[in-house]
Image 1 (tube, rainbow, N blue to C red):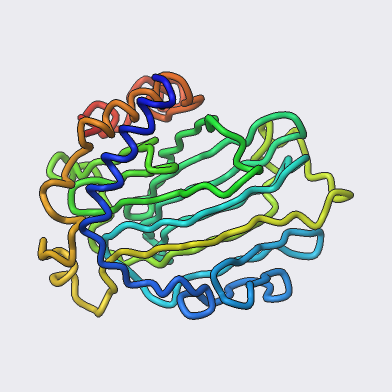
Image 2 (cartoon, rainbow, N blue to C red; image 1 turned 60 degrees about the vertical axis):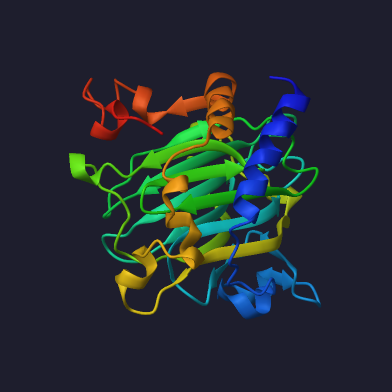
Length: 291
């Protein structure tokens, strides 16, 4: 697939989503989020439109949304750590923070200098995960900001990078597959030490002489249903809950082409192909349609 084809497909996807927008975030990190971890390692621009997280030997850092949400689309532009980032993990995710939590993860696994980042996604549903997928991106995520998005609705979860769908997780609850449906989730980001596992199975450790490490965030957009204590209003397919409209119950034809391209050329690990891990009995969702 050439660059022109990708551009045309992305424009068609963007126009469909933009015409339905009902944004609830202000675009100001100071108003939409609070610091959850090590305020001294969190730096926010004067206008509040950008924020950086710092990792050093003393601490990692993180922030979380003031509101909880049940369904919607969540976008964040992120620029990752250049050079030797081995052992570091930058995370952008939704989580319910409950013992039987639901969680939707983007995890950016650092690497030694000259080797590409790995982007790992994971889905927790009712406290259970083990649904990892890993890809190598088609660009260098340390050179500029790129948009990472999660669409979560009644029908499906779609992980996107610059509007390209890299992964889906469909609602197959009627077939006995757990799906995040009841627990509201907050939007969070964190930067932490994952050297025990993140790079080359934990063999490549953090080089602290390169610290402090800095990951940058900007231009967040939360287009979602704010949790008010009742599931009903968020599940209603009314115009403001555009994500629950039936036209978003599956990938569009353009998204399907891009999704197949990512899976063919960029996926490096998929739990749904790991027969050894699951003793030749793959999780039920692996045998069901992805869109």
